[in-house]
View 1 (cartoon, rainbow, N blue to C red):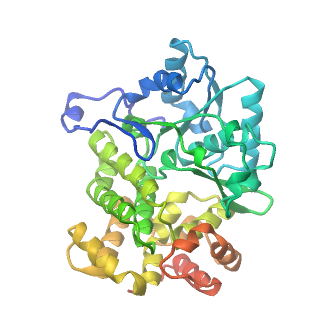
View 2 (cartoon, helix red, strand yellow; view 1 turned 180 degrees about the vertical axis):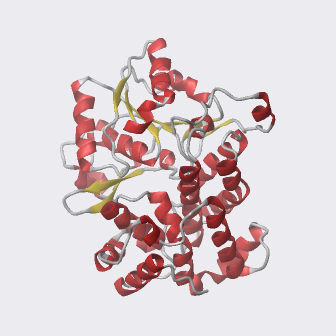
Length: 406
């Protein structure tokens, strides 16, 4: 990543192909969207009353100028800003407790979460926990457990996403590894939704093509699973359809021409849309990706990308009508399920997604354990078909071996 061009240095030829969008939105939270808007960080801090924020990111990003630049913006505006970067690619409860200790030790008064889904999730969880007396797992997304929290103790949050995939910047939850049980759990509270999002597509320019592809496919998975989830939610369906159209139009371009800021912008919008739409529900992709990520420490977006066609096949009987509408909305060649399935297979190949889980080192040794966890995962409830544990095991076997029989 460090060999990638700086987002602030483009040739005139590069700029000729860039017509990125720009705007201020207030749904689902305040979003300042557009290239170069990371320099508005001090204004966001002042708007939320932050005088000494803690910037939470991951170690890899500290090697790039965007972190030191964000801190410098604040320092020059008279807002001293601390730094915490002990965040794993799949953040753990230990990362959160260390971040909380760091926050209190230096007397911080707000969180700036800068990074991909890992840093954003960690930052939001730290913001939740700085004012709580109960342990982290008491706020797992089960029933009304979020009401156990002291809402007044939750620190204000600003989010600056550096990937276009998770959409965690507009989410009210964090995915955190429970190391004791080797599982990934969802921590939820409405006030974990960042109060201000600075969505600057320039921050995604340094992503290598494989991470651009994996995170972009994650955005597609959010939109697709939300769209397929049962229930009546036309607002979520509409957002999901447009999010999937943006992925179709722009993901390959973002991978192939990384300096194209219009492609980067449209993918960032698609990512935000996916996370907004999935309040309707997710499904078996995520139900399996969560335990797989916890056990194998694999990239969440890549897992969803690999699992996607296998889950679609298992859901085929329940999503035919949805797939006909989607094929029309995306102007695909052909009709219905077959057209959508063929498009996804072709897109995965175009952006370099492996065809099966075996290709990323996942074997069948723990299928039963993963299937059991998938059955209990909150995302499973949004799947169009309520799979049994043996069905999850069968699905996982197919995804490991590469069995794709349409």
